[in-house]
Length: 447
Image (cartoon, rainbow, N blue to C red; front, side, top):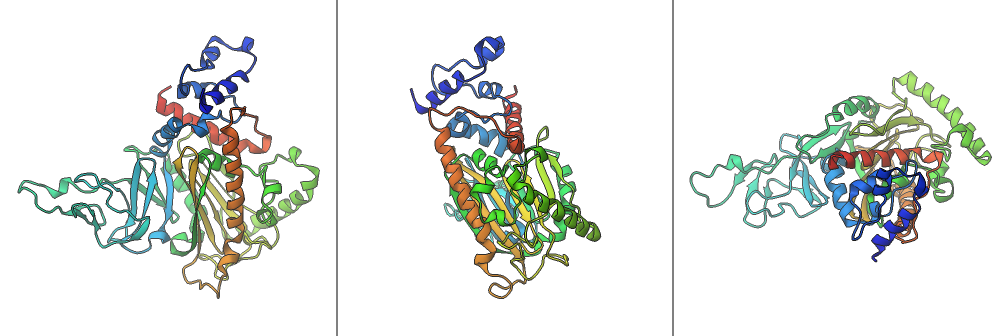
């Protein structure tokens, strides 16, 4: 029996008391003779409030299903406008078998194109990022404009119509300087609603007019869901993130009655800082209320402006701003953190002095790319207005620590001994993420 088979079989043995199962549940929990169970069976037997079974994190078949059912159908955050500031600037994004070029065309419009030559299918651009005049396939030199139009195809018969062979377009949207793509031919329509509601929160930071101060790609040795799940709770923050909890209140996600006594002083500071932040936001017309719609819709998201501990200005050890030049028209640094996350693959922190974006890109069942990008005012000068190490310290260390937690968990869920455990009350967002994910699988499987 393979490790995967053993994981499934063992987890089956821990299901609720067999005598209490319905016939449907009993059928659903039947161990397979070979390979992994039918994904629909895995979905059906998930216990609410509990971690997913091992194959969801380890199986190459489930990983392929995730790409088809989730990453190829939902809006995915891939970059920011400052990453492709000038016409011809591009980044390439790999999602499973897909490769997409995200670029700014000659008219300044953001576009997304399938990175597949219309001749013989060769990848057109091979680098992760750069700048081009036209897009030239290196195989037979088919040449495309930055809007995807075919300009040159060498020797072709007189009836050849170049207009029929442009690079295939991918749906793309920009919201507050953030770039999202969707590989589906009919993208989720509810993104319009999400964009309308988050834009007022993001706009005051004017992300489109910032510059990239730093970008770090970290390959975490874990499934993409473990990366996102780890980000959706702070149960682990108090012990695991000493730099982050200098300013991030470790009571995040806790109901009042569940806050440990030792954390009540931090909770008291959180309440006072929240009152001060709400007043500052109201005086400036900045939206700050929580919007949390994580399940029962295609584009699950959460956004809220929340206080920071210490000076309350930024993610630094003392909470003071890391960059002297504030973003947009913001006039004070003490505006906490505007935090947002979008399912399935991103989270964001907008402060008055800088913005940090995080995108999660699956590489394999057990490997995930986490791309972190720090943005400062476009006129800010390194060494004068900000120190790069100081700017990036908190999230660089936090990412490294999270990468270790994810790797440990990946090792654990790969063990034949793994049995899914229950979430704590402060992990309700993890439960919501998993529920949303299973809803997407059910839609894809038609069950």
